[in-house]
Length: 472
Image 1 (cartoon, rainbow, N blue to C red):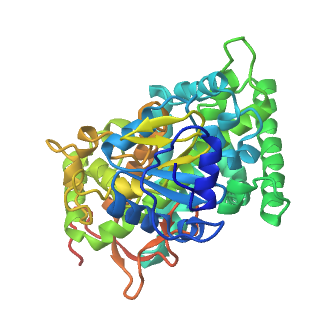
Image 2 (cartoon, helix red, strand yellow):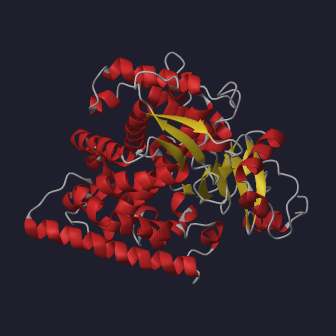
Image 3 (cartoon, rainbow, N blue to C red):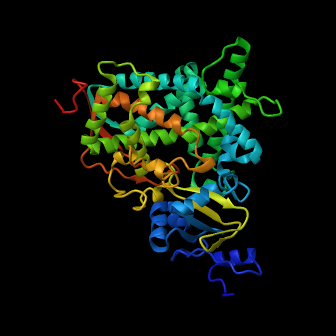
């Protein structure tokens, strides 16, 4: 057996004594101790793309104290998403979320309990609730954009985050909470999200200011939700929101959820959907402003569907294939979650290589979505690739992975896409957008969930003729 060349190879060798570990090809470069960690932190997509270009579907990178195995391409991603929770662990990879979600919740819960907890959301996403959420999305869009001037300039990243806070808090906790406390809710959410950083991956409980703000925010969030729960139980009021679904839910042993558990699970679905929808909203505005001919196609679809009607229904939102395809193409080009990770619990082999326990494995939507064999001309904005007969997402379910894949595919995918269709249906019928000369629209990798870099400004103009795309 050859002598290990780096401390990372030495670590792997110590863990696998008396046998040869045939790791996937190792990416060149890296620093002592830190390995490729700094490059990964600065621009993970560039690093993972380089790894694929040089070494194909499997590539090893050196990270502090361990190795990372990047798995790209349909077969490798299928392996990643279909492996059992006993062999590769989400929980071990996402310990930074435990202070936010809470002990014994989501990733911190044993697998059987986690499956029960996630199952509670199925009731929250049933048809009658989805109809209520859709009406809330539509009303929020009308109120928010109705207050805009006839023309002006807005930062679409800020608009997306603000608006999805309103829609999310309303769907999670009801209209009364949204009307009274959405400002405080937004600040608390911001303080919790602000603690998500590369440092939090390594030391989620380090006593730094960002972590202290996170912990105070969660305490206050529990207080707010406990007040709502107590009011509903004493008054007999039943909401048509996710909170009510969790209040009504029980574990298999008959135990009801505590207020702390309810809060943690609401935060779980909030973190899964809010920021994802907010940044996708902003990227969608940029892409439509850059592609006015396709925006005209979307307006024509709206006019053909609605005619002279201004009221929208859930059925309308489900009958917009071009708008739905636009959401999917936006998520393909700019997935908010650029990397998904697991920690290897049990050694496994794939593609002729050994993947040892203790290492990390990565799948990357941001890399997968630009593989030519899966998506021809990947740098071109082309929503028609998601229309029949192509249906790129259905033909490549392990290639189009903005929400993950397999049994861990995000259950909020329908909720998120419905929300975006509601918001953009209103905007398409009422406004035109243009990019701002001199502004550069590119991803900002300083955030854990990747959106456009500030400023992310667009010029808007209210339509005088809602059936015409041409400027007056």
